[in-house]
Length: 355
Image (cartoon, rainbow, N blue to C red):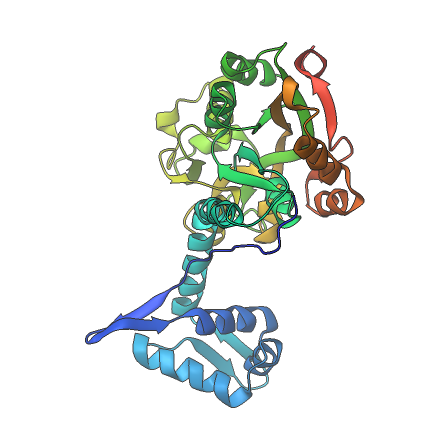
């Protein structure tokens, strides 16, 4: 099924003052601050954003008056840089966007389907439940004709077992931890009734600040008193993998400062660290690279979609497979740092995947 339109939802900041219930949107000034950070001077930032120099300065002065502090420091012949207040404002916005992305994308997909049902269509969309990831995100941008709900892997597989979705996304680390995590998922997977579609292999590891100022090298460093960790949410596969890594190293979770600090996406983990709120977290390499962080590889994970064997021949499922195997989508995955798409769209039984 091809959509004639695509619904999107994004968070929006508003600055309210006494007597102003509607508030003023911060969208334009946040975009300008991000451009100044990237360009290094106001003139270049205004040009890249399609603003006049006068309008850009006016926007800055307006919000400096509202906040009661400077947003930009300008030095003659040395360009412009954000003040600490503006930097914190920008990083807060990035953290919020990263944290809310899965929720908003799920809501947008739900709204899209509700509206689409009111229009003539050939067949209903496949129902996909999966944890938030860059390959899944790219799939949605390709208009794969699926109704997406972001769920952790256990929730998605349980939903597939109940018949509440058609595809369930989950990931497994290759190597010594695969058996332990697969044993947890096995309660929802039937070797006769289910099949797997491989999506990608991806690098997972630690995110640290550029230059690795704390000298973090591996799991043992998480127990250091000067290292602050940021974790994924309860129920996530990444959090379970962290638990297994600590267990193998003989480290109690109580020794890890920040173990109970949670974020819901790889991007939110990266934003948390890049803003200076933590020293290390775990996630997919793509997120680290997008935030200019250093990446310490630990494991490679295979990401799969599980489906019922009986539904493989359905036209909608065959269309979905064609999208996965298309040169355009393979190019999307190949452009993601730390992703390998060589077997993308490969069908296999559970026995073939996990002999």
